[in-house]
Image (tube, rainbow, N blue to C red; front, top):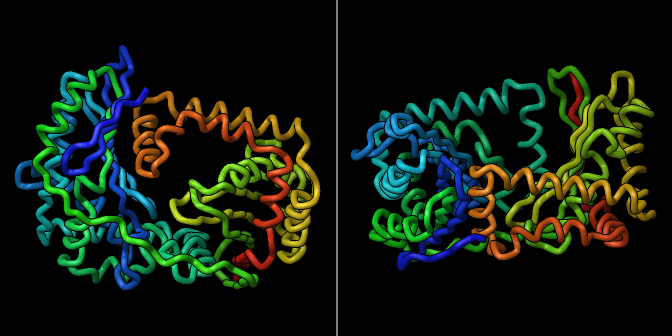
Length: 409
């Protein structure tokens, strides 16, 4: 059971009691990510995540007090959200409320600290996108698939120059706009009473003013009607083939069928693409299918490496043939049941640990589906073979695809 209350400033407080759990997990989830950035200044949400660990006047070093109290913390940024999570022994949990409330409104943006984290993020951009084989593929794919929606750039930014040049005033404005209680969810999981959680929430967060702003409406990506293709050459060991298909959002009707399709194709050692195209036909050295699960309409991605000596166009043709089978034939019940069982077990494991559960209920609340979060296995189990076929027919249209040939020089 998840208890919920909303403070007068709009902060949504969630609580799940787990008796006997010695650590308590605290997650502050903000409804802001790379999707909220401007085209001219991307990467701000991720850079700001780094700056949140640089401390405030009251807490010059964020990590040291937590470590001294036996705790640990971390964060992540996506295109949709930014999450900060702390684990502490239950006798020291109030420390997390104080520190998270402090940095919700008191980041100083000192130039020296900003420059340090700016350089850290720039190095991360170089390591993950520029200097790693296939690193820039996601940047290229996003720009192919999206033409107006801000999903067209990655969380780390559209280009290195944006991180290097973004003024501190722009970062501060971004912080002031989105880091407020009415754009956040505070989730707490552990052996701690709900009454205590609410007392500390009021004490530390209750006086932080709401900014009164609502999450803005973003440009709607037009329906893609024609296939987009691109070829690039890079210094990589194998040719790669990437294909992306537009699908619905995390809350859309096609989300669960699309997720089931991705598992039918590639999850585990019995996934169709691995068995048929890697092991049997040896056209690919590796292949994976997955969905983005975004708040706005997202993507169904297929990432692959083409086997040595195989023409990429032949590998692509074989891949399309596998997708056509899903459009024309029903997935056998035995195969579908295996996928359902895997989803059910994975859901249970994802919600066993306090940290994962804390994050998951916060995300569900932000999306507006907290009440149905624990019904997810039922939703997967209800997906029929007929629904999968209908979904595949809409999803795997060539006019709905972006195809990238990523070839070795």
